[in-house]
Length: 388
Image 1 (cartoon, rainbow, N blue to C red):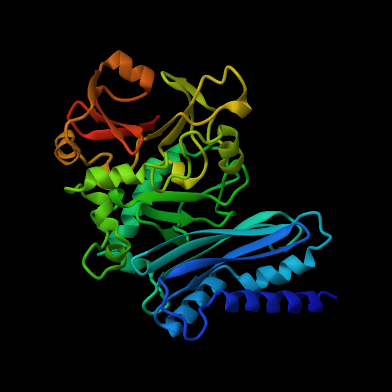
Image 2 (tube, one colour):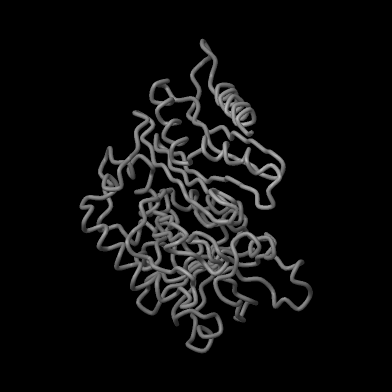
């Protein structure tokens, strides 16, 4: 019954993929990503297609890896079967493309296999010089030691933050699906292993600064090509680079911005816990793995929830072009960023109202925003605030 529709959609997918590729004789392009989109009666499928690679064979191989990872042909066939069904299918993705490394996570949400709504992750990390997948072990100097370290972080730091009421909340064993960015490694779990309170397939993001003792940053390694060393070390041009990185009102790797609607963010990512009062307003923490130890601070919500926006983004876990919580010292950042615009000593009483440890905060005006770097009493960076 649905064979003609499946055939039509398959041909459409092939046509859109071909249209995204450069014509013969065209000048070489820089590597890029084209969004291929298909929609049918409430269902939608979006997936990335790589373009502009120097080697057509590598480009074809890389796109085949993406198609397989996202099970795109199966999703298109499934979408055709759901024309009149009450539960639809939506496929979306996120990606990073830097230095000849491509990594993506493709999420199928809805009636993926049956009429019951669920979520399934598909991921791919690819070396664009060959079009081949990069194995997990290639990210580390010692894969066994890396797995042990990651497991320890999951058990000691992440698990205690998870609700005991989760339907599925096992963080071990490590999932096979993952993707990488310049900021860190994101693990994407099967929904039957780790399901959030909002009924989503869970993710956990671990920053490279937390794994610095086991990651391979040698020249020629995937993380070196991706530019990870630049995110972990302050340099002479860090002030300008950081100003540029935060000029949009957000931290790299954290999908929230100053001025963004709180309602929009909570609808999309869901709250991990109830919001709480602090000195600057109300603090929100969201379910998505990117928001672990990251708080969005809004007003006191005395007017209207729908009118509230993010006034401050607070990160207790961050690597921002060498500003690494738990590692960078005040001496380090002052040498790189210069004399702060203001410095405030935070007493125990004031620290409690801000929910930080006692210490000292330096303020810098960068990229049109204020950056507050808060160090503990030993001078080690513990919390970074971004505000108007």
